[in-house]
Image (cartoon, rainbow, N blue to C red):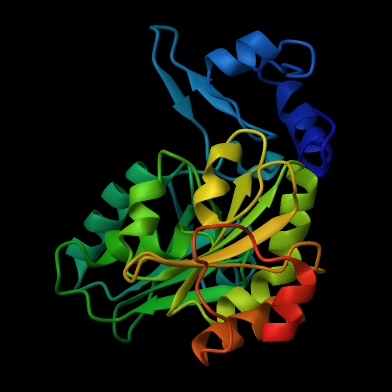
Length: 292
């Protein structure tokens, strides 16, 4: 598929494929039945086949330089800074030699998450700490209290989670039970959803303690639209839902969806200037602006 993400991946994939004969490319616009069989819903998608019927989604670095990287890369003061940007998610543990158990724990966790993050280890004479860089969303997570047995694992999971994720049936409960309100953006084009994510990151970062911003494939999950006060064939569209209170606030139909307008819409909801959807019909643009 010739979406923007696929075009970015293609030269990296071609570089690795030249020396790895077990790699195969599939055009889902031609082999749609095969892609459907393996649950491909967005592009580009990578799958690992072990030759014994087991299939696994690959969610790790999509750069040729990462193909031969060890599970945990040994770093020093000169290489640590450059390693921070080698992947979308990078974990660097600064470990004092007396905390050898942290090194052991890091290697175990790296084996678990190596398809989604790159791991580095550097010795320090100071206090042991772990930094995680979410480079796609420009976020840094730091952990200095390592007493809990699952502390590093929780750090990595928080760091890996995208600021604006894709809402699907597989993760629906996770989002609905997070305790946060959800800002849904529906669009049929993967390129348009990616563009929305790129421009909406500042707003999502500003409200991340209270709101989860998610995108929804309008073709694959059109049935999600109606319960949110939206019309299935009118995308792009946006709606805010508070699962805890059972309230839904459809964004004005036809209005521009920009960081400024969405941020203002969220603030108007908080201040009570927008009434919850009554379940009857979606707000039209003129009526919504009158209420605002």
